[in-house]
Each structure stands twice: as structure tokens, then as C-alpha cells.
Image (cartoon, rainbow, N blue to C red; front, top):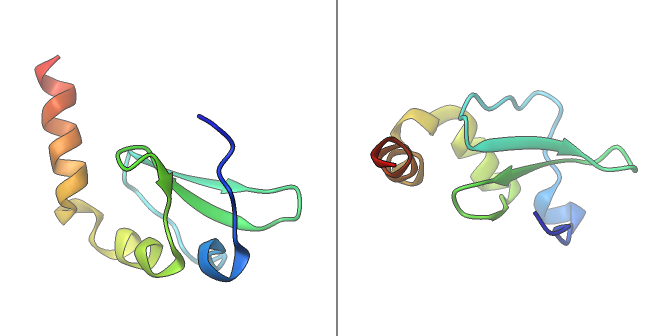
Length: 73
């Protein structure tokens, strides 16, 4: 994975956000900024998208598609 460009006002997530999706990775920078990387989209999620992902990850169309593709291999 190439090092993503982080813009803190858009990508930084609060400490309380946890995401159970197997395709989401919460990462922390050297500056202690927490961000979420979506493996399906191959990009960082915005703060708004991360909030949605934490609440509705089971209904995520990207996760469903990736799960189907992974199981067909």
C-alpha cells in the first residue's frame, strides 16, 4: 500500500470510533492522528465516511462486493 496523503481536517477521526469491518484499517500517524484506510476503495476515508462505516459497516455495498469477490476466488 502506498503511503496515503493525509489532510487532518478531512481524514482525522476521533478516538471513540471503532470499525468492525474486515476491510477497514485504523492507523495512527507519527503525530498521533488516527485515520481509516478502506482496502476495498484503496483510499483513506473521510471523517464523515468513517462515522458511517463504524455504524453501518454490515450494510456497506463495498464490503458486500469485496466479500463476494473474495469468496469466489
